[in-house]
Length: 147
Ligand code: HEM
Image (cartoon, rainbow, N blue to C red; front, side, top):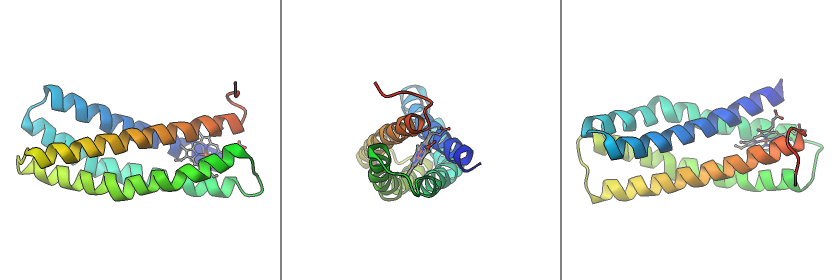
C-alpha cells in the first residue's frame, strides 16, 4: 500500500511540474495577457496545493520505505530530497505567488520575466531530480534494470 501511495505521489508531482512548465511556455508564446493570468492563477491554486503535498508524501513515505535498506540508490535519493524540497519552498512557491499577483494586475515588466525565468529553471531542475528519483525507485523495485 505504502509503495502505491509513494509511486502515485511521485508520478503526480512529476506530471504537475511538467504541466506547469509546458503551460507557462505555451501561454507565453501564443496566449493573451488574460490567458497568462489564468495560467498563473491555476499554477498557484490548485497547482501548488497538489504539488507540494505530493512531494511531501513521496519524500515522507520514501524515508519510511527505506528503513532497514541501504545502498547507493537509496543514498542518492536521500541526497536529492532536500534540494527538491528547498527548490519548491524557496523558489517555486514565492515565484508562483509573485507571478500570479503581477499577472492579475497586468504588470508584465522586466521583473516579471526575470522571476518567470527563475521559476522555469527551478521547475526544470526539480523535474530532473524527481525524474532521477523515479528512475532509481523503479531500479530498486526491479521494474527497470541498470545498464
Ligand atoms: C520526490 C521524490 C521521490 C520520487 C519521485 C520517488 C519515486 C519512486 C518511484 C517511482 C518508485 C518505484 C515505485 C514502484 O516500484 O512502483 C520508488 C520506490 C522507492 N523509493 Fe522513492 N521516490 C522519491 C523519494 C524517495 C526518498 C526520499 C526515499 C528514501 C530514501 C525513497 C525510497 C524509495 C524506496 C525504498 C522505494 C521502494 C524500492 C523497493 O521496491 O524496494 N524515495 N520511488
